[in-house]
Image (cartoon, rainbow, N blue to C red; front, side):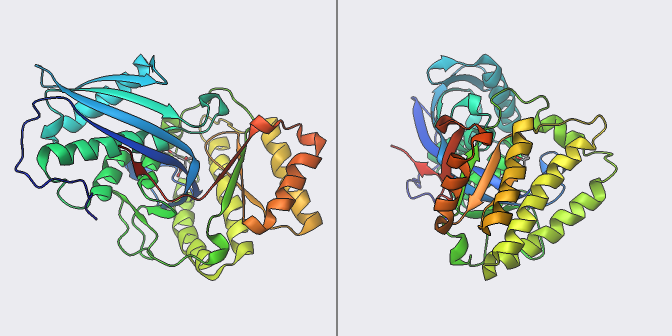
Length: 358
Ligand code: PMV
């Protein structure tokens, strides 16, 4: 799919500032990516839902400079963030070896997240995908072409910045990583799932229960590398391959029980990998366990169609169809043992993907 704003001119040199602006959502993986087999190549395929309320808006202004290596300034809500600017600079310097359009350029980047950083929601998927969509647009403006599909190029760039970001360039259900049951899938970029999804899973709700707002003790990058030499790594990667096929059937047929069982099992396996890494680490908090246990008990009592997943962090994502809204409100509001204040619940749902902003 071509970006409709592409021009078809010959490659040109950028003579004045040009800019690009995108809004890109976060996503939550149902089958998790955890472990790599090369530079940003996943050890197993993953399948996620792109969200709608949790997103990043990014404006990239590109200026010409005299030195060949790209320079980056980064502002979050108007405040300079030198550490993150340095991460983006290294990424761009690396990319500029093959992407001529980045040479002799300074990128001034302004970003805003709709979800507070202190909520402990991973912002790298939305942040890096928004940044890379801007880069792909700038590449298209400068070179007249991104040599292929615009969103595929953006996904490929985003993958190199942060693996899970590759999935955020598409709405709905998205797969990243080659799998025989997913025609067109690739380790290099994500694709929207190439099959129909049962209406039960359309517009799936994802309400995030914020259990802890602190900084993560161990980064995803460190967690991925601890899968090298992990005693259960091989079986985990094989399991993820099998789970893509099982989830495909559940999503196509509308089998909620199979979906819920697999989704929770994937979440707990991710955290079990952390607990059995060498050295071990734990990202769940006491409140996380209370919520998981509460969901399980509540489901047993009411037969409700609610399940959970977890990201690499302590917060619990409650997944449910619209028909269960009343049950979820009952679960969250009426149980004082959860001690939840409204600002600790982020109400999100499946979304349609990034938007180019003027
Ligand atoms: O994209 P990264 O390198 O931050 O890794 C993300 C890993 C998980 O969020 C735990 C799982 C996933 O597939 O999103």
